[in-house]
Length: 427
Image (cartoon, rainbow, N blue to C red):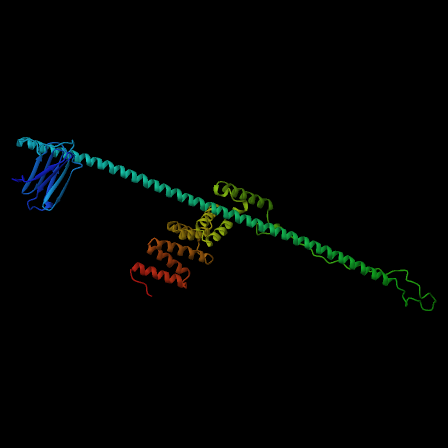
C-alpha cells in the first residue's frame, strides 16, 4: 500500500494555484504525473500524492516542473477567485475511487480525441503534400514540354534558315550561270564578227590578185597585147568556218538503252511509283511543312549529321525520325539515331535502333562491314552503360570478328572482361 504525501505546500492567486510536492529522495524520472480539470495525482513509489481539487482548472495551460527534489505545479483556474482550500471536502473512498475512474476515463477520451485530431491533421498534411508534389510534377512536365517546344522551334528555324541559304546560293549560282552564258554569247558573236571581217579581207585580197595581168599568157608566134587582161577570173572558194557541235543525250532512269526498252511501260511504272510515294507521304503530318525536294531521306540524313556535329542531338534525332518515316529500310538512319540516343542517355532506344540496323544489314558482306561494326559498338556501349556487361562484351567480340586489328576495341573488350571477373585492369 502506497504512503500518502501530506507534507505538501500550496499557495494561490486570483487566477493560479501553486503546489509544491517533495519527492522524498525518489529520483525525478520515476515520478508519474496525472492531471485532469478536477483531479491531480503524482505516483513515485512508494509514495503517492493524490488530491481532488476544490474547483476546476485548465489542464491545457497548467504545467509541472521537476527538480531539486520537488515537483512544482502551476495550475490555472477556470474561474477567477480565491479557493477556501486546495482539496474539496472530505469524500469517502468509494467516491474517491469513482472520481479517479471518471478522471481516467475523461483523460482517455481526451487522448483518443487528440489522436483522432492528430490523424485528421496528418491526413490533411499528407493530402497537402500530395497536392504539392502533383503541382511540382505538373510544373516540371510543363517545363519539359516548353523545352521540347523550344527545341522544335529552334530546329524549325534552323531548317528555314538553311533552306533560305540554299535558295540564295542556288539563285546566286543561277545568276552567275546566266552571266557566264551571256559573256560566252557575246564572245562568240565577237569571234563570228572577227571571222567574217577576216573572210571579207581574204576575199578582197584574192580578187585583187586575180585581176593582175599574166605576163606569160602571150601565144608563141603571134603578136598580141601583153597588157591584155585575162577575161576569166579565177574564183577561189572561201575557207569553211570553224564551229562546235553540241550533243545532248536524253537522261534515262533505267540502265538499258532506249532502243532496247519499252518506253510506255517504263513511264507507267515511274508514274505509279511517284503516286505511291505521294500517297505515303501525305499521311505523315510532320512532312507537311517541308518542300517537295526536302522530302528526301538522304537530305534529312545530311541535315541530321550537321546537327549532330554541332552538338544539337535532339534536333538531329528529329531529322532522323522524319527520314525513317519516309524510308524505314535505310540502316544508316537507325545507326545515326542510335548515336544520338547514346548522347542523350536514351540507352534502351540506342539498343533498339542498333539492333534494327543490324537486322537491315543482312547478309553480312564486306561492303556493310563498317556499318555492322558501328552497330555492334554502339549497342555494346549502351549495354555497358546499363551495367549489362555480359551482353556488352558479346557485341564487342562481334565487332572484333569484323575488325580483329582494332586496338581500341581490343582494349575496351579487355576492360569489360575485368569488370565481369571483378579484377582490376592491367595498367
